[in-house]
Length: 250
Image (cartoon, rainbow, N blue to C red; front, side, top):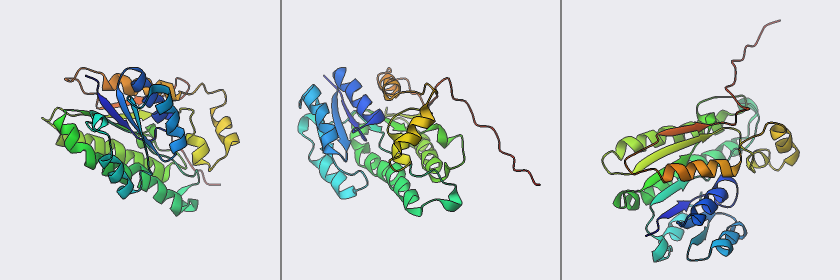
């Protein structure tokens, strides 16, 4: 009997790669995202019996509820929730940052994530399922311009630990994956469409790929049910921890 994974942000990056990885391995996949045209190729590739596309803005609570209520019976029993949808907006220091960008990150990375998790927890408990939350090394290692983005990802990591404690005894596993530098659309979105800035950031760095992270998600999801990875921090070999900053007078 195949299991079912609901993967948010499946229109690109980690989410799209994870959806393909799970579908190719025989899982049923509920792929969500705002852009229906980006989800349809998953259905075309694997078939409607394997992938169900649910197009909605994850920040829209009513649309989320409607999409979950409309899941076909074959996809309604969720065994795995992959909370991948998220974004960074802006690179400016806090004193010059856009409040609108901050609110977008909080609404997407925090509010939407907890809302979807809350909706699906009864199903996950019933099926002794698993939750994999995609956080970031920014949750642990601050850097200039990270401000609200790092704060939202710190929330994701701490919320995951709290879930782990609350779900004790239910059999539900909870894991946070905290990737470092990975080349996806992340920086293009963060810079509001500046492809050149993205190309410059990753140039020569040999960063991780979406497929690299999808493999980690798949590995965690397929561990024996008596094993729980609490958090998995992963960076490309070329990346290491940022140093302290010292501002000098004179």
